[in-house]
Amino acid sequence: MDEMEDRARRQLHRMHELNEQMSSIRVRETSTDGSVTVEVDGNGMMCDLDLSSAITRLSPREFEEVLVSTAKRAAAQAFSQRGELITAFNEEIAESLSRNR
Image (cartoon, rainbow, N blue to C red; front, side):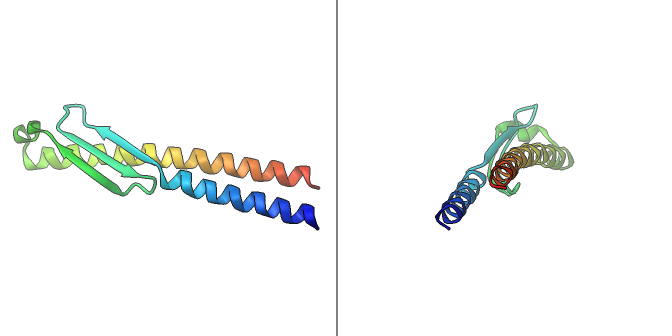
């Protein structure tokens, strides 16, 4: 019984670690022309936006395209990081379960 409790505590602790790691994901991406820098969290939500004076040379349509494409690249990187964390977590849990059979 003690072994089961210890295993459950370890898994719960690991779940808390995963949550903290995923909560700490931040990705910054800058457009190729340097006009827009976007920061997103692990959910792809924009946390910060920096605009350089280069945006004054962009039409509204170009600005929209640069902003959206930059945010999309940042979100893709954040999702990739998040996926790597989840994959590692799942592998650890699977290994732990197979050891305890």
